[in-house]
Each structure stands twice: as structure tokens, then as C-alpha cells.
Amino acid sequence: MKLFLREHIPLLVYSIIQLFVTFSVYWLDGYDNLLTALYSVFLGICLLIGYLTYRYFSHRMLYNKLSTPSKTLHESIQEMDSTPFSVAIQEVLETQYNYYQQQLKIWEYKQKEHLTFLNQWVHQMKTPLSIIELITQEEDGESFESIAEEVDRMKYGVEIVLYMERLETFEQDFHVERVSLQDIVQEVVRENKLLFIRSYVYPEVNVNPNLIVETDKKWIRFVINQVLSNAIKYSAGSRKNVTMASFEEGRSIILEIQDRGVGIPKEDLPRVFRPFYTGENGRKFKESTGMGLYLVKNIIEKMNHGIEIESEVGKGTKIRIIFYYASR
Image (cartoon, rainbow, N blue to C red; front, side, top):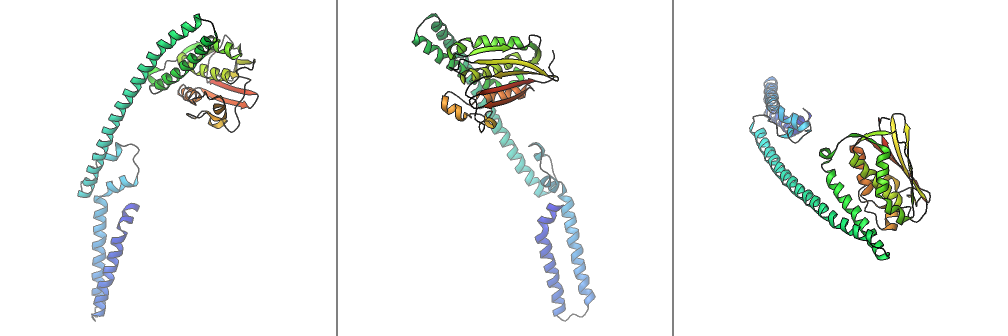
């Protein structure tokens, strides 16, 4: 109704002026029968009210649709009134809707092609990297050690790309099962054995072997691996421990990964989970992509787990992964 009244304010003003002019002409012409003049004005008002009433009820569906925002694109093209004006608007909306649907299909097809290409590229890269890694393990020398380090960096980057691609279809690649938290942590520690050795950092695992969590084993391994890799990287050369400990808090099981490295500046903490954000440490170490913790945060949320981070410059960083309603 408000929209209808706002649209017809000019018509109302025009009609009032017209009636006033008509009444003035009668009066200035010396017509003495005031009642007849007033009656003509009254008839004009009645005709105006009748027209506005017809106009409102014939376009009521249109005004209601324009006054109430549509929740979905499909709702915006639902049939309205059969008046010429409403039909014209309906045709415009349907044309736009069909155009956007067509563009969306084109975009989805291109996105699918892009993801397929990335997936194939990642798998093609994994084989030569594995071969190079085997060769470097069989040879000694500083040069081969440097090659092995670069291979590890490349494998890390390839893994980031792979899981970034998989995140787009997370629901299709998600399988919840009961797994031992200690087993997962130990597997990740073994995977990072060479990184621990090269970085002069030592793992300290204090995870209760009886703790069972319900999660996706593949995704949670990636999450723990990302957190642990960061802990090692930012503790490199310290000859200190990276501690992985578990404890229970109510119905939740918490895995805490703590390093004694450089720590994260206070002003960077609220932004560490943003995509491509590297912060002060990223500029210093020049190896950060800014995507690791972003992926970790997204995966944790999709699995309905929780994550918390605490850090102090010069003392290290503590990250807690929370498994809600876990079972022992």
C-alpha cells in the first residue's frame, strides 16, 4: 500500500489542483449555485477514488512483490497480475532470469573444467616428486639435502592445491568414522620425521591412547599436518620441543599443538585464518602462502569441530583442535 500511495502522489496532487481550478472557474464566472459546484467536485473525488481503488486491486500482486524482497531468484519470476504493465514486467524478469541461468551454467562448466585440470596436474606432479625424493634419500651430500628440502616445499604446495580443489566438493569426499586420536598424531609425526631432523626440533607426543574421536581421518590428518608443519617451520633451529597433547573438557576432546618458536604478533592473530594473509612472520620467513591456516579453518568448520589459537612473540604458539561431543 505504501508503494502504491507513493507512486500515485503526483496524480493525487494533480487531481486536487484540477478540482480546485474547476471550482474556481464556477465561482469566478458568477455561478451562484454553490451546491452544484461542490457536487461536481464531489463527483470528481468519487471518480478519482474509484480509479485508484481499481488500480490498486488490479495491480495488488505487483505492488506486494515489489514491496517484499524475494528470498530466491525463482520467487522473483512467479506469475503476477494479468494487467499489461504487470505482464511487461514479468517478461523482463523472465528474460533476465533465463540469461542469468545460462551464464551460471557457463560459469559452472568453466569452474568444473578448471578443477579437473588442477586435479590432473596435481596427480601428475606427485609422481616425479616422489621419484626425486627417493633419489635424494639414496644419496648423501649437501646438494642432495638441499634438493630434498625443495622437494618437500613443492610437495607442500601441491598438497595445498589438491586440498583447496577438494574443498569445493567437500560433502562428496567426507566420511565420518571413529578413529584413535593418538594413531593420527603419530602418523603425522612420522610423515614429518625428516622435517623435524632438518629443523632441529623435537616432537613430544602426550596423547591418551584411549581417546576416540568421530571425524574424517583424511581431512583431520591434513589439518594436523598443516598445524604441525607451521609449528616446526617457525621453531626451526631452536632445538626445542613441539608438544602434541590431548585432554578432555566436558564432553569435548582437545588436541593441543604447542611450539616454542617465534610466536605471532598480537595484531596478526585475528587475521591468521584469512586467505593469503601472511603477516609479519610471512614477510620474515618468505615461505608462507597464507593458505594453510585458511584451509584448516574451513575444514574444521565443515567437520563441525572447533579451533582456537594463542600466541606470544618470542614464546611460541598454541593451537587447540576441539572435537565436540567426542567419545572415549
